[in-house]
Length: 414
Image (cartoon, rainbow, N blue to C red):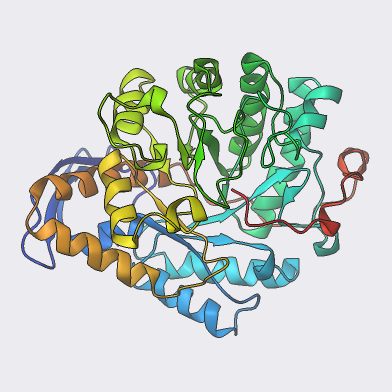
């Protein structure tokens, strides 16, 4: 089904029926004022909640063909590109055009990439993509207005290549400069949370001008940690402070948030007494209570990679998926990096469909997530005519020389 650009998202959603649950949704087209009723499969709603990494760097690769088929079948709502998927501009544009076409019968595809700047940018010089300085260097040498201009070059490039979602900006506060995954890598703008918010806003606005969605990360703040959650459990309860919420709150209040990515950090300051100690990404108190309740965020929440060791080593796939959904998550991210599993969409759908059979409350959670995702995707507009980006002085100024991203070997970083 193709959704009109200004479709006002669903007003009522009824309880799913049976194992292959169908839900009746009523939508109103503001152009006609008429309500249209459609039967929407629960599997379709679940598919929109799944975003996966994939194998292959060309349209003919079996890994890409598989994820393309999953997109066409509505089993996934988006994909994530890693370095292994990137060959050159022509090939990536072909792949992204195919993904967009495959998603046409459902809703626009979220075609995501990590292109923060500095050490975390999947598209490198050798791909022919303009490089952007790290957040730390950006804040040191540029005003927020200059940063917005610089990020405009980045966002224009992403649009040209066919991407619709950039997993940035990082709005973690630089509490611990020795932090192995944030501070040491120059991924935070500043120790000053208001300054972080200002530069985060510049990043978001630049992308919005070019029709690219963004995701603030990593709620509720990963900047004070002493460990890397890619490698195992991380507890920030003793190092975290509530000033790390300021960038999130300021950007939410200013209407400059598309998605928020959660962190796999344990933070007892945001969890109720007696609540089982779990990562924030699986905590209902942290997400529904704090992020949705106290910070009043009504948009889309996306997990960090649920295959990271902070989750994988402690929780089964079933527990991670159900806990994340109950906590208030809308999109479940599986990067398929170290242990690629092309069948993840089928496994996740089976978990949720089975659990939803006997629990109407879970169906309501799925309904709500689906509604928020469709609202988000309604902001995606047809990109402008894709033309090569001409080199210019600004692009040259943005080139990162130290550290050289091409020489760095790091785990998947979101």
